[in-house]
Length: 302
Length: 245
Image 1 (tube, each protein chain N blue to C red):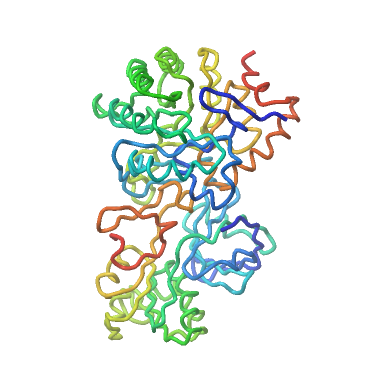
Image 2 (image 1 turned 90 degrees about the vertical axis):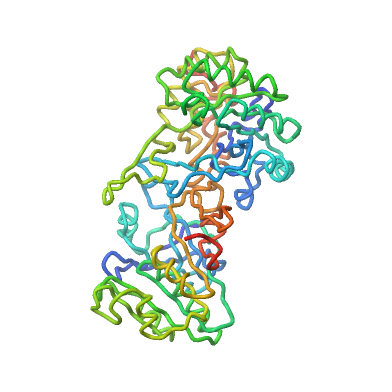
């Protein structure tokens, strides 16, 4: 069974990548299994300066998933380049650096500082965060702004740039086409869906941040639908993400048009879930008559 | 730290909505006092972090937890002979110090103190356990601690048993000095009062968690310097003064 996937900048031995924010920089999971088993790792978002994140509670469970409002807590790009990336060099897996910011210039600054690292094979732009220069709206909700930050990132980047799309839009295909035209090398979709829970005793939001991002199996059909619609409209590869819990889920994402997948909050449900999916994937592909991951990609689009 | 299918040996209600569950699992061999495990309740997405109340031997753990919502209600209905998906041991627990200690527990904060009492009594130290409850009918763990030879002092808010008021009222009533080493777990207000009174000791924090291993940054506490620590990985037990309560 051929699990390999070749994408811009990424030579994946298998299509399974832990998603950004759910895996830190891999240190905790490295105590559980060999990270070289993974196709790649999308490391936690980097911003130009350290971010403390949101007040707690940051986590709330939901039917079939969870809400989070961590607030992009990280030590800042300099610390990550100095301390985290060299440690990751020991593993035979492809590192995707997730880049976030409050302004377009933040993305440029993070990319400039990470370009020199041979560990990072590609960037993933998190364009779901509120933008301070544009009245707090997410760059990912406006095709012009999404294209602009993509172009600025591409101009300074030495590595392929993937854009991680937010599902909190009316027409995700329009955003996808805009970032493709701006030079994106690939798409990662979808980020979390904006949600909220209220405590019945206090009548107050469960999350200190009021709202948070919904992830887990609850969002999987939304992700599959958006990938399916987008894959028909663009010619750049898609890394699918949203509620994947099993090798069967991976196949469904491949069918919809994903070339590889990221596994997010499922890592909290079962910390060994990524190696389990990788181990089970050949059986599932064979069961449905495929000899490779590539064969299954986009099957539903034919 | 490992994943295991633990066998439920026994599960009983020891006070209203307070369950004690005895598990057979190899995780017990690596567990120390004040650590916790993550339990996957069938049908729920996130694991429940539950502190270990006693390490019976190298293959048996005892847990005491409160039914606080739908997940723990399902957990409470599981029967002996059923298997439970557990992951652990997790976090940094209470230290075993070479001294007599005062344990202070409020309600469902009491369980991790039981093994902590046992470890100190086994090494020849006197343990005073001050336990706070809403009322007489809510009391649990008293006999368990007394059978380990801990001195147990009860405080109830309504005065139906022991000292009327909080654990701090009981500490005053019994003249317990602030120079003792304290180890505490319970509501935030209680931990604040304990930290303000005692000169040195440790507090165990509770927070909503996702991964339980320090990766997701879902449960954080602030240091006085403004840095963040992870309750699940750097804690849940912190030295008094190391985190802002």
